[in-house]
Image 1: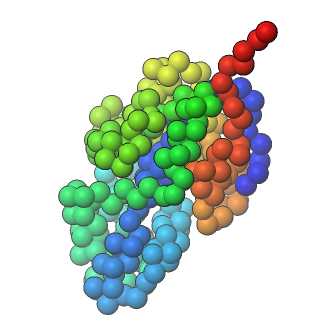
Image 2: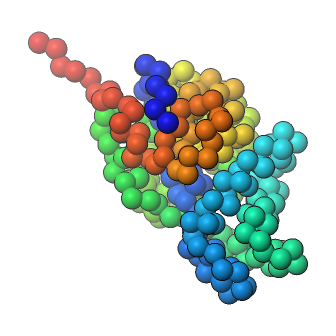
Length: 238
């Protein structure tokens, strides 16, 4: 977890889903209970870790984000021992909930304050997310927008992670070179490998300490960033 970050960092870019805004594990656990499956929100979160590992094969096969979404939740429900014939209905319930309200909108404690502190410390802050065109609105709805300078949403710009070009779209308006930025995300196959190919320094959000085999600095929560990044504000000289 404590692997050092390089010197000269001037900007921090973030993923959104399960990074700045987390899946509503409590809602999913409640929906599972309605289907007769006893499960805790923490267990749902753990099942997502396994699904993120399986995403690597989809990324290698260049499966689009839109098409991976349903498969991702199917893997989650498989790991939670949902009967096979009940999985499609639950996946569709998640898709409907996401379309109407957004599933990935739980902002965990300390996130807003951390973004504000990063800006106060002199860092440029942005978002790069594979999404459905709603990220800018979501940032506003959950109160993160005032602390974010640029939002790159794959559905808006027409390119998806891990294509390196998507990060360039955020770096340019921020006036950053790739080597001056870190990228914080939760999916090794997308966020770590993609950011690294784009020349950024990846930082893996790993709250359950599930990716110890991934060669990358890690944090358990967004506020941990404040212990890893020094004050970058200009110092007055006499």
